[in-house]
Figure (tube, rainbow over the protein chains, first blue to last red):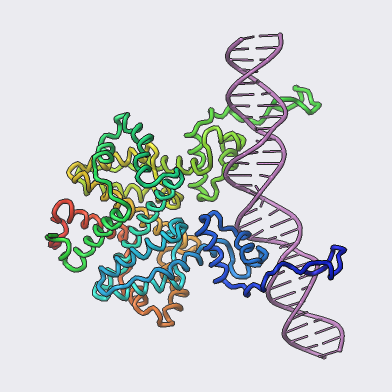
Length: 241
Length: 241
DNA sequence: GCATCGAGCGATACAGTGTATCGACCGATA
DNA sequence: TATCGGTCGATACACTGTATCGCTCGATGC
């Protein structure tokens, strides 16, 4: 309150609304505010003005802590990586845990699906997550570690993106899962009726439909089996009972 | 030229600049213009105003052909799928071909990496691509087709996204590939120096570094091997010489 | 104790975005 | 020939990220 322009005397003027001195600003507070916005209303709801408002601060103030909005998004992703802590001893457990943890994080923060894989992740939490994974891959040949982790990450990112994309499409039509699948009908059925996509039509109509969990795990199993076959001689992939 | 407000007579007034009657508008022309912009300057360069300008048309005109910018992006992706035509007879060839074709398309249209997996792809070209894949998977059990294709697509999307993200990061620093890897040094080396990421440091420093092609193919091989093991009894994954 | 400096803050401004609104126009119909 | 309906696009709105730059205030030097 730098200058009082209104004619009212102090005595008449009400105290400013009860804003307890907001904790001093910090990257962490900024990022937390941004994440709250994104969790609530999606990534589009994250604007510097809205973040600033949420922190009871003027927009340009944020530029003392971040250089650009991109940086804010990077910080958000890294904050999400703080929740991605794979556990386990054997390499397979660890990779599976990494995959599930990433997927879980994306379910809690759908905006993560929009950002994952979009830029190299070099933040401390992402690196720490990588460290946890790599250090549990001691029994894997050093040259194989990166390709293996990269492959699992690639699969997870792609799978999660599609999963979230589908979930949003369902939500947009206001339908639950079952009715949505049945409601690709109106469009897909019409398309299939042309007879130009016979193989696709057969599969969509006749095949068993796995749910999201099953699909994710099945793809992950494919990948882990393939990795197993190459790095430890393929015990797991041989004669599955 | 609806009304002539200036006082100049027709004879003095120059003809309008040489705009040969632009071909009548169409979704295809709009999408092509948008793709040209995106190819040249990235996805951020695609705005309805710029697209309209490129077509010598006023922005609102576009809304006669598309309902929103999102739709335009969907159309762009579907147009890109027109180039993704997997070939081959055996399921493994076809899936590999699908993967390579998708990757190739994303290399030619980097913006594709930003969009892939972001929304369900139900356009005619995407469906046709799916049909081509599925119809070549005749020897695969019908219930396994969708999960298998989904897994490959997921892997490809994630792998391509990361690949493009890295490429951009390299380009942003103005460095070629070798110097970029050596220039994670300044930052990563400093981070590793703290000793908090020993396993990661070891791998980054000691392991052989595969290039992008090798990494992509290696991950893809993992996945295809794993699929092989489950759907055809695992011949390929057993005793690799 | 006072003057001065510098850093941080933020009001303002700018160039751009997607899209709703609605008046004006023109071609086809009565 | 008059009227109607649909198309077109100018304008406007609310919003974006961020550059600029004067102001203010606290710390420092005398």
